[in-house]
Length: 604
Image (cartoon, rainbow, N blue to C red):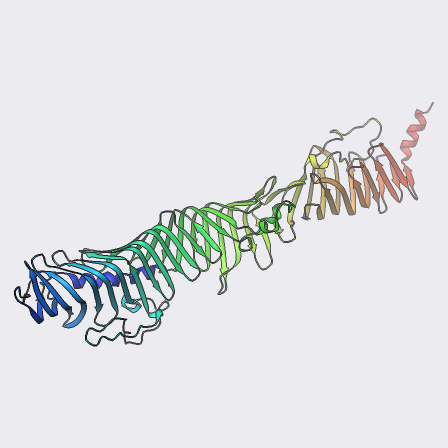
């Protein structure tokens, strides 16, 4: 049973007391003012035609208009039928001030047994229609009294169940109805006057489905007297139902709107999810709630989009820390059983410092257990931890296949380089990232060190840029990489942005990195390898380059050509450290005739 329904049921505890306690304006009979009276009856009718009758077993005058009454019973009629009944075994009645009071018990209940309130010690001021019950106040209400939805309360049998009370004539106690049919309110103090009724001190509202506690519960009636305008709960308000718990300094219930609003540092918890904000509003009509202002939610990592792929696990992090709650921050949260939507400056932070920021975050739940099935982040989505980051316009996390799909011109910067593509697919479980369509990745200079794939230059020629140029861009149809490797597939093209005269193309290229610093260690290119450097060309089926050694090896029917010569062999080896070029196995050199003739003419 949600808090809005529970708040609505509280109306009965004061609404019917208000109708019963309105003082009669036209009195048809008076209580005798002299002598002891037994079995007296005092009927009265107000100007609206409501009838009230006061009964008493006995009454005797004490002094100056003060009467001692035994067995007091007040009955009200509505549409010629008995409506409300008030009973007190013993009380004192001041006939001058029209005040009844007693340290003893008071019982108020509906004739149809839909509502009752009892307590110890009361004061009834008839002049201003004020009732005070000072101790052990207990209220019982049948849920059907306030039209509780069928989904909350059991179907009615058409016969109201009796509420627990002592029958004044038989002394027997009626049977207690099922806990699912009633709501009970306990407090240390109760007061009703005019259009306000107040429960104070240790207020506890409970039924078979949940509970509400607070320090003060105030019900304000409409001026027209046709219903309840609002219900206010103050001082450490706590609402609990099954796995739901909501807390705040204040709670306001508007019956006509069926809205309950918690303010004053409200917090809430649903199963393993918990959060806070500035305003928490529960909508009973839609079975949803909304949190506004500095929204903060904590939940376990397996209930949220994984961020573990952003960093390499550290040996300094204890295993228990890896399952620390994830924090979600935002401006607004709209929550239903199917969706949880965060709006405005949304940020997710995990225990290791990884974060996700976006404009809108939508959690999609499915099944009866409400488990997360999909998560969608939109509007400038950024994953980040330290220097590792990925950015796009939309991220989709699918729980079934455990992958994050980033679209909308996604780009990334992960250790060994940065890149862009049309689609970025992240597998947090294996910490693998795959980029597809129009992939372009740039390797940073600090990761490349002295990488230079250039071939020996003809005498007198030089690069258009220094051979120490350290920028490399690799384009392909797709790439898959981890912290230690990147594998590019289909239409691979490696270029130096600062030197358009140098490039390498192939079908598969693998780059391997080592610690510390994720330095580039080795590059392997395979299938239709072609290297261009100015007017030099090299071809083969495989190139292996050992970056720290400055060593490149070309195999698979390799061929090297210049405008004047062609070289063939089983293997070409270029050593950048010693500036040597070697051919090995079945090598052959082809020289253009014009080149030989020119050389002969120049000979002495």
